[in-house]
Image 1 (cartoon, rainbow, N blue to C red):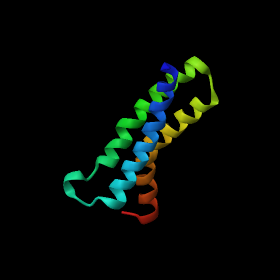
Image 2: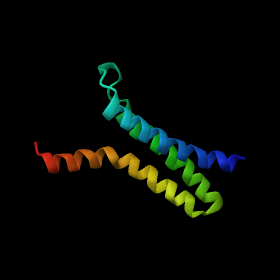
Image 3: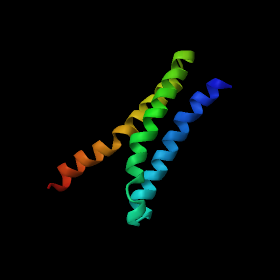
Length: 91
C-alpha cells in the first residue's frame, strides 16, 4: 500500500506539472494567475523525485528510474526553455 503511494506521487506530479505549464502558457492570460505553471515546475518535481527515490530504494525497479528521470526533466524544463529560447530568438 505504501509503495503504491510512493509511485503515485511522482506520476501525479508529472501530470500536474505538465498540465499547469500548458494551462499557464496557452490558456490563462490573467495577470493574477500568471506564473503558477512555472512555480509548479519548481515545487512538484522535487517531491516526485524524492518519492520515486524512496520507491526505488525499496524495489530497484526500472519504473522508478523512469519516474526520477521524467521528474528531473520537468524540473529542468523551464531552464531548458529559457536557454534554447534565448539561443533561437536572441536578446
